[in-house]
Length: 343
Image 1: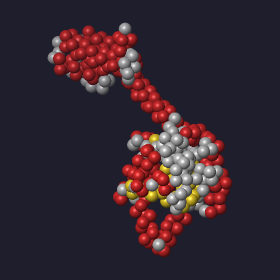
Image 2 (image 1 turned 90 degrees about the vertical axis):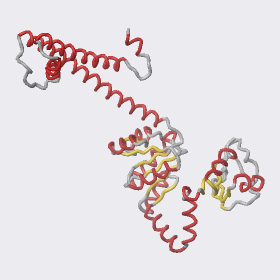
Image 3 (image 1 turned 135 degrees about the vertical axis):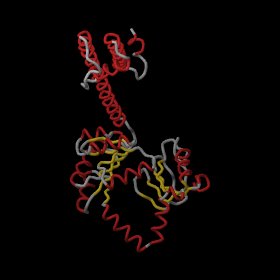
Image 4 (image 1 turned 45 degrees about the vertical axis):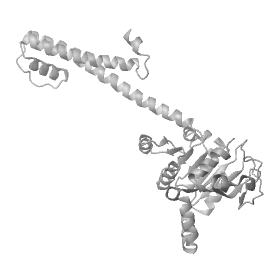
């Protein structure tokens, strides 16, 4: 009846209540043993407690004093019941801990599988760590997919969503929430694996933005043919950046400072004009981004052709689905996205 009364409370299961009762019984049995030895053998309570303790814990030290026949019979009964009870307590608490761990894992997997608008990072190597750090810094939802179980457990413990699995397997991508993801970044060391991940991901989510890593130009073309939205070679990017620094140092300095939003409070962001937005149907001149939100529209991606139009003209029309590349303070860009581009 007590189990039925308290079993409905949140977080208190019948198994836990039974485990608590078993511990209480063990404490009570210890007290019975202490009193029993003191009464039957005419010992002090401390000697009785010590004898009950070494019997119950099966330490096996020599008795405090020589036991009488009655004391020996009591010891056998006390040890049989007590040791059995201790085994039950250990079993029940181990089962609770194991089941709790399994439930937490299932809850985490269910939550990840049902996430929306998140980014999946396939491969948590050196580049993967940097990319994940940058995305988390931008306050975006991230799921890391890696075969190293120790690594994924470490990430989950530290608050980073991670799934153990091979990214080339459909089940692993599904577990990472591929169907509702906003983007996928595959950074596996083998280009052939990146090709296959791209094929599988594109099949599971045709609208997904896929960014892949490639080691050379030939493989870059193959990954693009597999369905990647964009392919980047870290070696090529590094070489181009070094050339940019030496040839146009002030241009590179400007771009670096603009992209370091934390230091200057500036940012360059893409903002989507959603359906029903008050900007739709108006020209850039009519909206006057500089006056309203203290931002500059430096490029537009039209919904009609998905082409990048740099330095748009004041009379260019803003339409639903257009993507605006804007430059300004982080706060004002967020204000633009919330007030101007949403319905």
